[in-house]
Length: 117
Image (cartoon, rainbow, N blue to C red; front, side, top):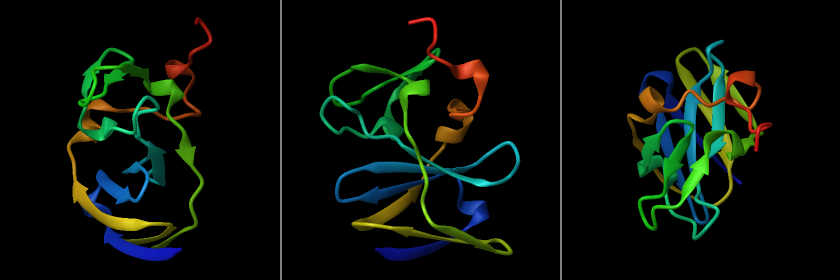
């Protein structure tokens, strides 16, 4: 595990690891949330996909994934003022993203459920 630290003002942020793309954003309660945005089909970066309603299209193959199907990760995290530290395995790097404007997904949000499938 490696500890990475970034400013809350850098969020939303894409954390790239050896095997996944993780969206780091703030919840509606201003708590850090980490969502695995890796396409289940071939591991593409859903963080760079096009949003269509309640789904995101993988930029590699165009497969649609329902936002409610994306896994919220329970990562060790600590906040220090405007700084957030998180432990993550296989860290490669991170980039800022505009994904937050499109993705209001929260696994505890009943508005984004998949019960009707």
